[in-house]
Image (cartoon, rainbow, N blue to C red; front, side):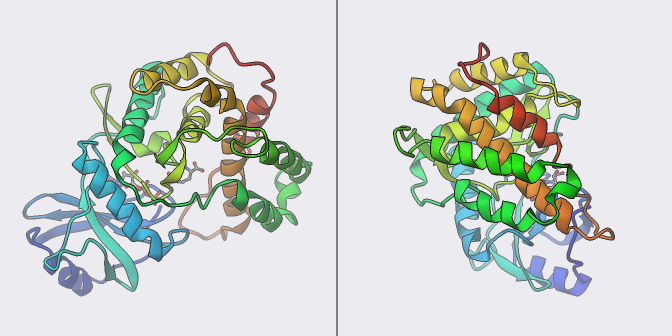
Length: 323
Ligand SMILES: Nc1ncnc2c1ncn2[C@@H]1O[C@H](COP(=O)(O)OP(=O)(O)O)[C@@H](O)[C@H]1O
Ligand SMILES: N[C@@H](CCOP(=O)(O)O)C(=O)O
């Protein structure tokens, strides 16, 4: 359950009254997601998503995220479009939190991933990469390689209680990934631009087998395009037993390349990028696993799902046949 902040009805009605979106009919907390408080806001005109920003989102960065969504929606990408209030502002304050209203997207995220989903998400991601080109403001990846050593340090005391030897394995992975990262030493920099940064299945909606929308842009940033693909290879291309599914990976790369072909250097960097992506999600999940109180409303995600992924990508020595 991800509703961290309750919204008193009178505050909601004052907030919604600042927009030209009709009268509030209902406003219900949404029991999915982990980062922010999301509500389905139904008005006499339409359905909207009301988001109160919590936790990891830096309020100073919200205009960048909202601006990116506005820009991508203007390019024809199906993503939440921030709604401006009567004073033309897309960011306000509600119940003491920064808050925004965005358009509601129809569709549902896939619970059972099939190969066609992976091909479709690859193509949708490549479109996002191309569509973002005209949004020139940059955002550094706050969850990039520089963030990983301090995250590991914060988990150092308790990490081995989650799995024996985990901290040493993560130290070793960081020592490998850091110097091998694109742009480090002899490793070439790669094509870069606006990436989603968290394109997991629960952030991609489908209708009748086609992508109907991408949501949750709050890890978006300016980084290597191929890193976004590496994140999605982690998130979509393993089964429930954390066994790698080469057909899914092949389909995802094929879908991506149907829109934006990868360069040879991007292809060569994918194993290390995917190893880094596994480290990144293992670490954020481990941090949450250790620091989420037992009575919290949100259930932390299992960090060890990403240990199997890390080991898989780390062990790739030659270019894999699915690439
Ligand atoms: N624009 C949207 N249209 C429809 N549903 C949405 C939209 N944004 C969020 N949701 C719903 O809210 C849930 C949580 O949103 P998400 O952005 O993933 O939250 P968090 O940032 O907290 O992880 C989604 O799984 C979806 O059900
Ligand atoms: N996708 C991340 C967690 C971020 O959650 P989201 O609900 O914002 O997508 C993970 O699975 O670790």
